[in-house]
Image (cartoon, rainbow, N blue to C red; front, side, top):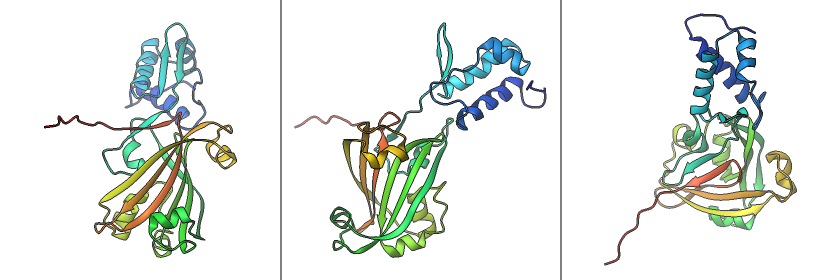
Length: 245
């Protein structure tokens, strides 16, 4: 449908139209965009307008441009800074990225030995379990298993878990003070439990991150085991070398 002149420049209208198609999944990763000539005819704009719109999309990291072949939707790959304690949405939202969470279950379970060890409670004690899938631009990014006390789980039951980070909910809604987190990162391969929620094949490379949120007195508030698609996520860390002596 041709674009119509209004207060928004034509290139911005075209950019936003194409951007929405990418974010909605109508143009998936690696999909080829129509050529400049095709976009010119389809939207009734000049080639200069098309090029400016594509340049903006390229700057936002939504497309890649291959000389002689055209423009393609990029595969979203994001990096979270390990030096800052933030929720995923807080760290990654913006620059054309949309993070959304889908709830799989929220229930009381008996703590496994691993969960009990991290939360410092007896094994098989009742704990609240959240199972969710996070999406980056509508594509699955991570499978998450979160554990906390039953009381804390009930206090966040009505929170907007689809669009807010647990850390923000803990701090702003519940009033908890979180001062530190302990993390461990492990490489693993996908099994049957990962195939459907993460849309991967068995044996695909994954990244498992275990994190414990700690209160000022050092007591654990929350334990989360998150499995990321390694083709869409990485951690980044900047360290300084200190000379000895």
